[in-house]
Amino acid sequence: MDTSNLFDFLIIISGVYLIYSAVSMKVTGKISGGALVSKDVDVNKIRDTEGFINYMFGKALLMGILTCAIGLMGIVTSRINGPAYISLIAFGGFIIVLILFAISSNKAKKMFIDKIDEKNK
Image (tube, rainbow, N blue to C red; front, side, top):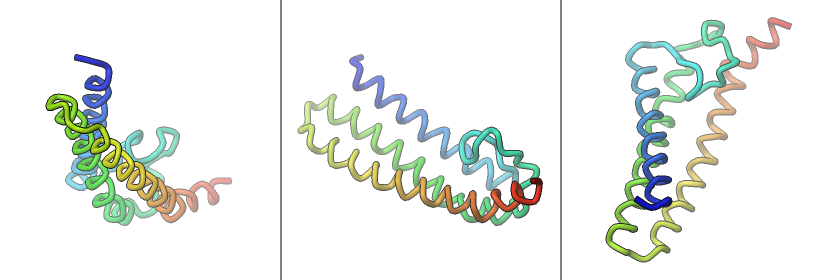
């Protein structure tokens, strides 16, 4: 296994973890720190947990699926000795989706978490 395949496997693992975190959050109704919110945020103090879950679930699930797809595409492309530009184009699309996910995550933080921090000061 070469370095690029190892990197692609790590990408797939991170996508699977993000999917797991999103589904777990939706099923249990609880937010776990680390995947979708910073570990320093006390998830028990989020004022609207259900709103946060509803806002972030679809975005996190889509991001996890796309992350897995990019990793799989990298593995398949390297296995069949396909053109490298296919992976490059897919990775560029992934970066765009990652930026949009970060913007959504920051918006969710402002909507559901930051107001809690202001009240505690």
